[in-house]
Every structure is written in C-alpha cells, then in structure tokens.
Image (tube, rainbow, N blue to C red; front, side):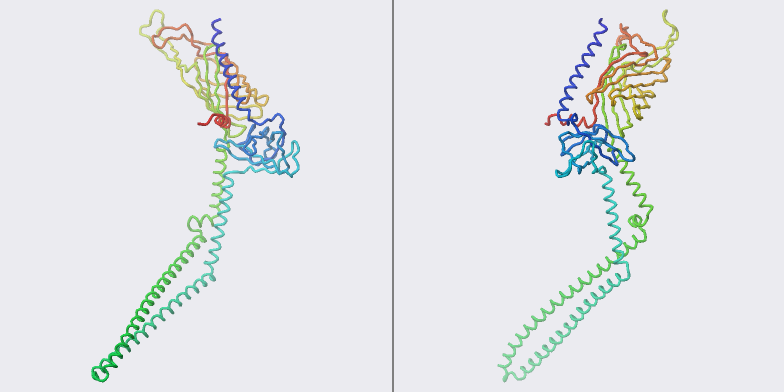
Length: 517
C-alpha cells in the first residue's frame, strides 16, 4: 500500500498543474476571435513561407480570424481562412502578408473592402493578395536606382563626349578669353592717356613758374590768382588720378578672378570627360558594373541568394516545450526541456535536454589482492552517474507520418511519429542506445501523446521494452552503507506524464498579458 502513495501524490500534483494551466489559457483566450460562427474564404499566395495553421488574420491590429488550411494548388499555395462572422467582407477585399518577429512570426492583414462593393460569398476567393515584402522590395528599388544611374551617365557621355558638345564648350571658353583680353586692353589704353595728361599739366606749371620769376612785379596779382587756380586744378587731378587708379585695380582683380574661374571650369570639364571615358571603356568598379554583363548577373544572383537566406531566417518558427514523466519501476521523475525550430511546415529540428534518473552507467573491471572470502579475484563494478543527456534530431514529415534521426539521449538513434485527428493524437517510437554492452537489445521507447487546448500534452508508454528489468544495490555516497532501495539501470519500465508547449507568438501573448511596470 505504501508503494502507491508516491505515484498518487505525483498524480495529484500533475492534475493540479494541468488545472491551473487550463485556467490560465482560458484567461488568455478570452480576447481570441470567435471561429465557431466564422465564415470561410480562400486566397492564393505565390509565397506562403512563414504562414501555417492557426496563423493570425487581423484588421486594424485586432484579430478577426485565422488560417485553417494550407495546401499546394499547382504552383501556388491555397490558404483557407476562417473569418469572424460579423466581418462584412466585400469582393474588393485585400490581404497583406507581413513579418512580426525575426523568428518567422508572420501574420495576415485583412482589408475587408469598400462599403459600396458587392459582398463576398461564403467560400469565395479574395483576389487582391500582397505576399512579397522586405528584401524583395529593397532589391527592386536597387535595380531601379542602378537603371537611373546608367541613364544619367549615358546622357553625360552624349553631351560631353560627342564632337558637337566639345565644340560648344570650346566656343564658350574662347568667348570668355576674348572678353577678358578686351577688358585688359581698355584698362592699359586708359592708363597711358591719363599719364600723358599729368605730364602736360606738370610742364604747364613749370612754364608759369619761370614766367612769374622774370615778371614778378607786373603779374604778381595774376600769379596769385593762377596759383590758386592751379592748386585747385591739381587737387582735382589728384582726385581723378586716385579714382582711376582704384578702379583699375578692382577691374584687374575681377579679370584675374574670372580667369581663375575659367581655368577651374576647364579642369572640371576635363575630369568629367575622363570619368565618362573610363566608365564607357569599362574601367574601375563602376565601369565594370555597368558594362560587364557577367558581373551584373553575378551581382543579381548574389542579391537573390542573400534575399532567400534572410527570408528563410525570418520565416523560421520556434516552439518551446517542458515535459515530466513518472517512471513506476524507478519511482522517480524524468524531466525534458525541448526546442523545435520549424523552417517549413513539413520539417523541423529538435533539440532536447533530459534529466534521466537512470543516469549514465559505466562498467569497470577490478582485481582484488587478495580477495575476501565472499569475493572473487576479478569483479565487474557498475557505476551510475546522475548527469544530463541531450538529443539533437532532424525530422521530416510525409503525410500523417514523421521520420526522425540523429542523437537521442546522447546516443545515435532513429524514431518516428504517427499523427491522427488533426495532430491531436500521436504515437511515437524511438530506437536508440545500440552500443550498450550489458543488454541484448537496443532501447525501444513507445508512447501515446494527446494534445489539447492548444498548449497542453499528456503522455503514457513504456521504456526499454525489449530488455528485462535490471537493478543494482544502492549505497550511501558518504559512508558507503547499503540502502534498502535498489536503483534501476536497465530494462522495461512504464511511465505517465504531462507537459506544455508554446511558440514565440504565444510567448508574446503571455508577455502582453502581464502588468507593465
């Protein structure tokens, strides 16, 4: 009777955890769209990567439906959508696929249509679908920009590279040089005339000075008047000289600035001609990119490969699970933490970390000198070590069956699943541990798994079916005393268990339900 107390306690604990989780999930599902009275429509997508069963359909950020079925119809994907019954869908309704997370969280935005359009019938098709997003649009924009740059360089080559364009530029430069020479000539001629006028005035004043020296008495009054007049004239002439001298300097500076500008313009035109010539001849990276068709094809292929890689990375979904199983013969619990990476609906990668109470068994041969009375000279010692095991498997689905292979509980192995009732019920079989020396058959584990409420799972089955149970005496690790219980290391053992699982979208829903600080 006492041997049933522990399983009974574990069962009560599992039932309590399942009940708490059901209440939690019901609280989370209160805001989910009602699909019981939903209407069904369908649409065709050229690219349905990242979308799967239960993918959300929303309008204005509010969930209004989900994807109920995906299948291949010809070269396109046919998606069946369940939309809330109170949504007034029109014949001009539109669908937009967009990414919501780096782990491949895609959803569909629904525009129900204009009020004046005819209503969409039950099971009808939504024709307007946009399923190309992200990197594809960026690549198309880059192609358009490259085409525009090529047209600009072609126009520059036609303007500056032809004989007519070069002749026009040469005519402009010749006219500017002629204007600068005319300005310089005018300034030189005006300077000579002014110098001659000043020389004549200086000679006139000399004659007047000599005349006043010889006829000082008679023309003293005239000399005084003439002196005053000459001084006034001299002041005027000095002012004119200063004025003309300042204007000449400014004009000369302007001419020099114009000549420098023309020289810079000529050098810039030469550089543009050199650049366009090199591009036309295919020199340099830009020239090779524009003129080398093979290089252009390689660049296009590279951009396409990068786009495909990013699309696969964004389209990958993740599922996290935690499962506990009670082993009846062992009398302890086995815990498993797993992550499924799902790049496509028909394949996934499974990584698991297992806490197995059986542990790892190592075999050691010991020779005793001399042996005790009840011991032989040669003894085989089996040692169990409690440590984590890991699994890493690749899985591929074919219709209702999934095949798996890889590492199962730290040894090589294969496995498979059979799915029934929309994947709610699954039968799993794993065959592994082929190299164990102390058993006749490899380890076979079979289980029946049932999933419900979208996140809960219960399981029951048998482990190590082909081998008879084998146990060892257990000893205390501190004082070495023998314990009353025996530790099971091999053989058949029955188990029951339960667990839960969630995707990255469920995790975000959980975070949104928590109170913000």
